[in-house]
Image (tube, rainbow, N blue to C red; front, top):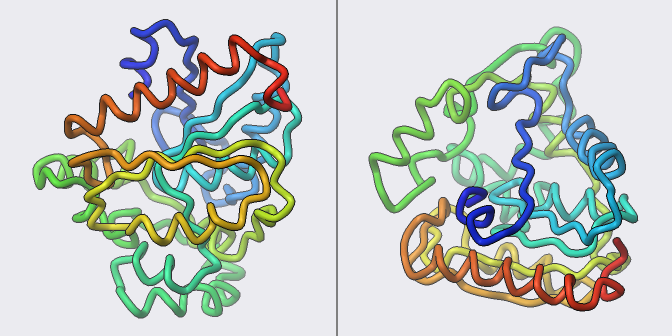
Length: 244
C-alpha cells in the first residue's frame, strides 16, 4: 500500500512499531499498547513540517491511528480499514482465535499481572490469522512471518490493548474515512461502522470491492489508493480543512 501511494506522489513513512518488523526493542516483555500510541504521537510531532498529515491504519492499526489523531494536533485526517474497539465484546469475539471465548478477553485481561504479563506468545496463537486474506497462501505467509504474525508479543501487551480506553468518538475532531474491505471474512464492516457512526467529526465510507481483510484484490486496492489520494488532494488544496 505504501509503495502504491508513494508512486502516486505522496510522501510516505511506513512505521515499524516495537515487537513487529525490524524495530529492535531494548525490553520486549515491557512493551504495552500505550507505548505505541505515545511513540506515534511523538513521531507526528518530530516530523511535523507544516504539511497536512494523513494517518493510514490497517486492521487494529485503524483505531490506533484514530487514537493518535485524537491526541495530536498535527494530524489532519485518518484513513482506516477497520475501527475495532477491543472493549466491545462483539469485536473481541471476532478478533481472536477463540470465537465466543474472545468475549472473556476484557475481564480476563485484568489477570495478566506479574510474571504472566511478561510471557511472550506468537500472535498467530492469538489472532485469527487464517482469515487475514482471501488468498490462503498469503494468510499462511502472514501467520508464519517472523516479522509479522509469528512475532512474539508479551501477554501484558495484549492485556493493555484489551483494556485501553480509546478517545470517545463523540469528542473526535479529526475527520475519519473508513475504507473497509467489502469481503472481509475476519472483521465485518458493521463492527467498524458502530464506531464510525458515533464520531462527531466528518466521516466517509468506501467499501473496497472484492477485498478481504488484507486488501490486495482489485478493484478494491485501487479504490483504497484513489480514496487516500482524494483525501490528500483535498487537504493540499485547502490545508485549513484539518487540524494539522
